[in-house]
Length: 360
Image 1 (tube, helix red, strand yellow):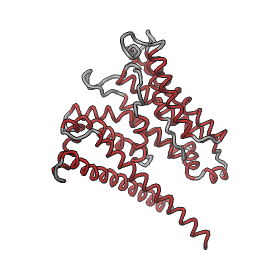
Image 2 (tube, one colour):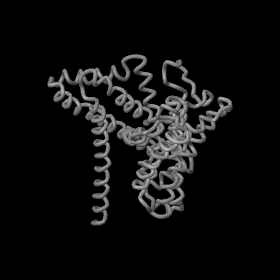
Image 3 (tube, one colour):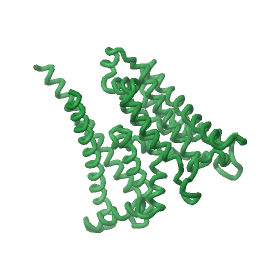
Image 4 (cartoon, rainbow, N blue to C red):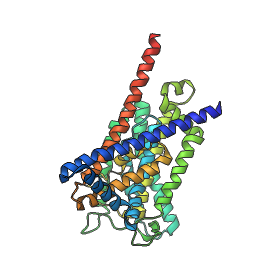
């Protein structure tokens, strides 16, 4: 019985992987036609130009490869945050705001002088986790207790987070002659283990450790079982004695904690200060695509984050080759459309099965 179950699980995982890969391939294929239109060139020359520019812009040299990992690191955090929410049947579009809160809290805590290095970093990380968890827990509580829509609430929380960040950045902690706070203390900086000339830091190891932690949480613990049960069928979970309300709040808080941790790591490892935001950084929104392509699998999030990190980084190289940088966004959009189409097909297939069962 267990052997059959494991076999089905492997088959489903392989099928999900193939669908994600197919979506990426189709996204790249469709993008070729837009390059043909922009460059007025043939199919094969356009394809060669597109793939060459993406490769050179993201993996072609040591610096590009390292920067791709820098771009991918925050996407691992936000992808994991969305994955937890998706597993509970929630759409936490507020990961963007929770990431911003994590950055803000880390920036403010990082300004405190006189704290020893390791302790200061721990304080920043804990601050980001708590800030993100509270920021996500609010719409989670409202959904669980009042039945409000988490999408609407988290969208509003995103804007509040952005303007709250700007208030502190440009107000009490404003650095003169700069649209930012002062740089955080050296004791709060994560180590750039490849040298100061490269931005890659120990935050990537924190992200990879978190991948393992989230995987264990979702598939090896009672909490993860209950979260996934609520996501599969909230009614059936309630009938089986699992509290839907408790797990909605818990899942949102965990999702927000992961996003807040990502924001804190980004400040401690890369940015080192809070800057005025004229728009969203988009790490949280890109995390939606990362989680969708990974099918909410924590291990898959790593590879999905690298893919989208490479696409985001290579947009500059595309411009050097005379290709509009929006092509990278187009590829991401097409990939998401195909992933979303699969969910729609599943929805209608299940609906037909239910109707057929009722008619028998």
